[in-house]
Length: 59
Image (tube, rainbow, N blue to C red; front, side, top):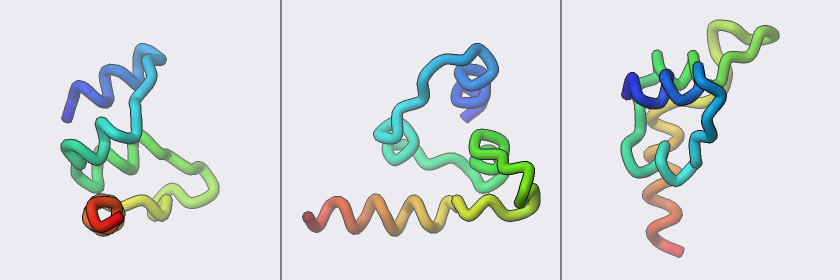
């Protein structure tokens, strides 16, 4: 998962499909989607992405 942080640090695109293929930890997600208004909870979690991923399979 450090590859995602490296991509972000270099300004490279991170595709949503890459996130869903190998969902990173909440810690990494909080760094990728940092929100200064809500630094503790940005609303994106590993569990939430897993739910989204399983829902997308059913469609």
